[in-house]
Length: 207
Image (cartoon, rainbow, N blue to C red):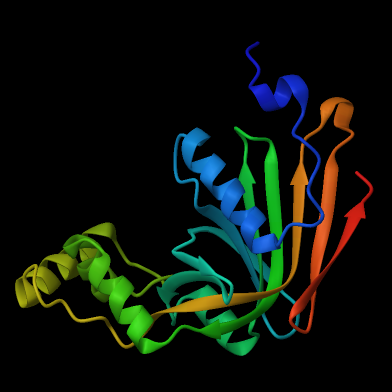
């Protein structure tokens, strides 16, 4: 069985003096070099106001000190849950590095300008699909969706495809970021950064 360097020697211990966003950027950079597909993939957990959770895989589309951004149909299940209960948890898991990051926080909509800019950056087919799809709702047949997609393409072509009013993005504003990495013999290294005003307090955790 082949082992990655991280498996052979264990990851170096977490630097508790680091800013969590700086550490996230470093780990994402490592993942972009080692993960075979979608290093920006993350599990996004939401909940109804009465506590029924749901989770799905999405792609991170932006990150800065304000938070972590993804986009969706606002009328989808996750969109409806986030509008009704604006809190979410994210999980990044990079198997090649044996690392993961858990993020929790409040959720706010991105600005229309941000949503417009990202929508315009997508491929024409993806933009047309966003218009044609009633995301998460029942679909009588695949053929029906493909027909709607053809009709949408005939209406707009591949230029000047407008962002639908029900399609936008959310930003998760973290109040906690936990970093976990594998160490030999399951003596893993964990630490959690918690926001306190404009500062971050960090605590190392037992494996």
